Image 1 (tube, rainbow, N blue to C red):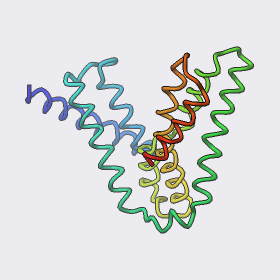
Image 2: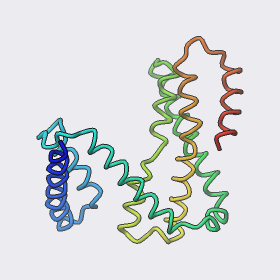
Image 3: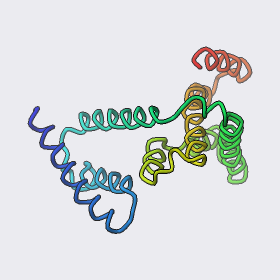
Image 4: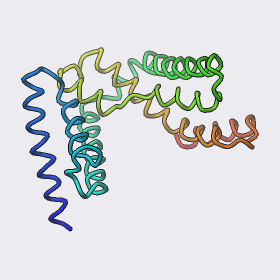
Length: 191
């Protein structure tokens, strides 16, 4: 069993090295190469990986370490300096994306709860991917990079209330006003 995971890790490293060498020559970001490696080695294409659960755990640890190293480079002082852009821009981006999907649901006659949920999903970016791209381009310390990083942090913080709000959307018998009040209290307590 332990040898199977080691074999899977060696396969993933070898395949990702080959794909990223090719992508570097083609001037395509390495993050895309890592995603393609996962698709190729995963169970739905070639099925090279047999210990899927253990590989998923290792991938999550990798994302945590990536976010940790980027967190070491980001200062709270700069976040406070750009707080208006971060909070206003982040709230505006999440709200507008959810509103667009809500409006689409009324035009297409789709359930508003499902469309609002999909709107919230589209509003959240993958912090790990965007941060890796900024790091590769050496834009993480620029004003643009720090602003993007701040908005990504806002989106990550919004994930908590959105997850709590998802339970409200999935419960057809819920009292909306009472549940929204409880949601606000839970969100404030968590944050």
